[in-house]
Length: 152
Length: 338
Image (cartoon, rainbow over all chains, first blue to last red; front, side):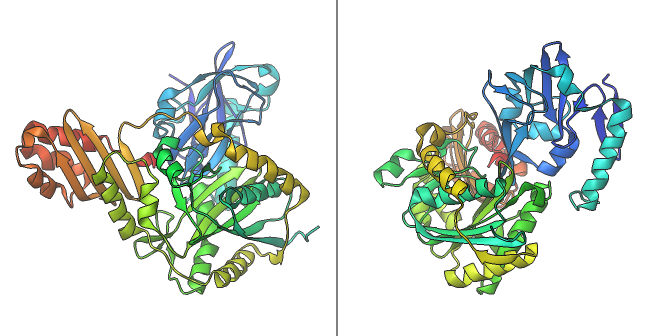
């Protein structure tokens, strides 16, 4: 059972790190393998995904660079890497059915896997654990609500 | 250097097919690099086909386009393949990403609202409907798309002064003549031109966007950086690899969208063949063939028209195995990818 926390109705897994601005999570699934996906706020603000495209396997990306793109409401936007590394796997099910990302963003709706190149240093830039995740997410929810980004 | 409270306005006039796309993409790169928010206008001098960033090139009948001399270009914003010609004037609003709310639906609503005002100012009673389509009644009167290009967000749309529905349908790869006929029928029904004075529209849009963002409109020109990006974009957009686009999974059902909530599907399943036009979840028109229907095809079609797609299996329950096959085709339809 994955440890998790609920923040104002949003469930967040506590076994992974969250990029605080781009709303992409990173889960270490093996020492040389990190899985990436969108967090619930990223999914909600994107809207119903119609398209998902990922950079080819073998692509080296640096933290902050695009690892793919999504399209919702005819609006194309980048998916940004929270960590540097080489793309080693795609979630073919999510590419074929981007709605999966919306339905299960923390589980089966993962996006891709990276072989990280600087995990120790860059992991510190992510929000992780029961002490950090809830206050960060509360803060983002408040910020988004004040900006009218989320429905009350 | 424009003042920080400036809405830069660029009117590119008429441009060839390539430049009618690359000019405003170059502007988006400029805004990303620090140019002021920019409203631009351009009218294509020639007809062409433009496909959305993620879409499969084989949605377009590339051979038919080649025969007709129509260039096929891929844009960096969303949506499907569209036929564009000099009966349309494009507008584009480009802003720094930091100025746009990080909620796509809300961002689009905010960035299209001034366009709605501009349409109304020139006598077109347009509205932005719940599907984020710019409509008069239930007819789409403006195509739009959006994208984030580096650190800029750009939303594009068009004033459709004339629209050739047949020419538009002819540019799409369609599996069967019945599907093309249904596509044309739905286009005529749900896509309308709104002849209006383009100069008046440009002025109204400029006023509306400047007011909406609290900016002062000022005519401008391309920066050196934008001119350099334009040359690079000209090359990129003509590169066959770019035009081919990203690898995308092949759909198992042919579908084409006419406007949000209105689409055509055509598919086969074990000898049953279906072409259907769907509007707001209901089947408007359907053509069915199955060797075992033994003359009952017309009854099946009659039973399906007006029904919700979700209800098709129940409606087809009285038609035995052929009905099950037709239901199986309809069950594979998925408008969420359009």
